[in-house]
Length: 295
Image (cartoon, rainbow, N blue to C red; front, top):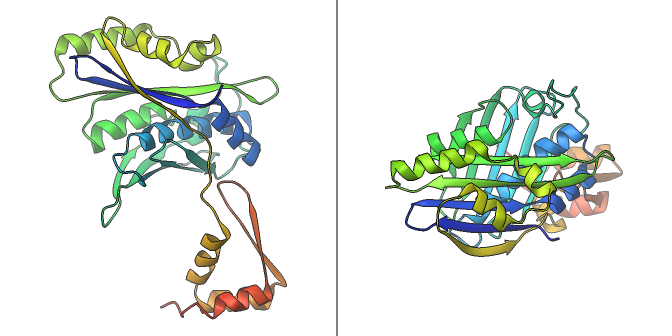
């Protein structure tokens, strides 16, 4: 089953929701980065919410970057989502691991640690729109809920989950984001909160085969639900040799000269997909003709 995002609204209630199944995306990230189960869960949760946030952008070629910088062993987590919901990401230490929590679950909060979450939205303006909040618990869903409340002033609830199988592959992954629009009634908020209090974890619902439609219906139980569009999503890297060449040129003449002198061949690895781009001395010499001195 392909990964997808489904959007819906509670009719006449001022509540909107996006739900995503991202098993394929998270498994692809695991394969690329060779992550431990802990790293798979942390990166997978971040990829899921970044995909949802990217799909909500109003501009066709916009993007959103979610960066989580905690003091835990996982290090920095960076994910980039496009307006079509496709996403890519990496983390600083894919080999990081910790003992399970007392309840038997992966200790994502401990892996992330204390720090901050930053969201950068490129929506075609002169400068990107940036928001930063302190991490709540490092479990990522609560951290994003704080971001929406403090930076975008949108009351939200979020659930993210990655279920790792015994062979360390991704059994299922996904999440949902529900947001309240201005003018929502107190009675509707109370009903939604009651639904969320009895809701199963996202991975439990996915693992027993519930569709995104059924998951949304469970979140919005008691509301009239209008299902909007469904989008197919995937893991997609935007790297290219041309972009790497531009990055090398931007280093400046001094840095490029140093690379030419010190190495017979230089290699640049894409952080998002681990693709390796090789450059000979002659190729670097050609790039040097386009570089300028950095001030």
